[in-house]
Image (cartoon, rainbow, N blue to C red; front, side, top):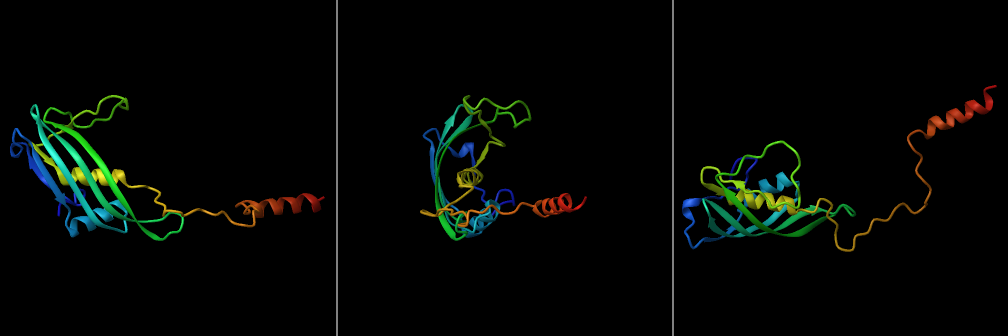
Length: 176
């Protein structure tokens, strides 16, 4: 298990990737899955895996693959536990020349993704998989077929100032 902000760490050095590339299948162990579940506000994370193809690209690396998981969440309609299947595609380039992220004007969303920094000649595939899992989570998970039904009586709830309005009405009609 890694640091609290990186509960799953699988470092791969640029030197470990041959000219033909490197294929990896990763599966997070139970302690890493529990830590990631806490980080993502999940009720559980019974499965987290990633398949990556790493290829050299200039002085950097290209990482292409898929992160898959079964995530335990709570339905926003029924408040019952549910499981969501996650499958997120990954296609990143890591370069030793990539600048660290800086504050500045927003980047054009239509522009090509800039390379990620290759720090110390190493890519942490566990951190990449964790990030893509968390990005792939539905923030408002809903069980199949769950429908929100508003209150049946149709009468609006009295607002927070209903008591003040009643006092004002009473004062206006009998105060003079």
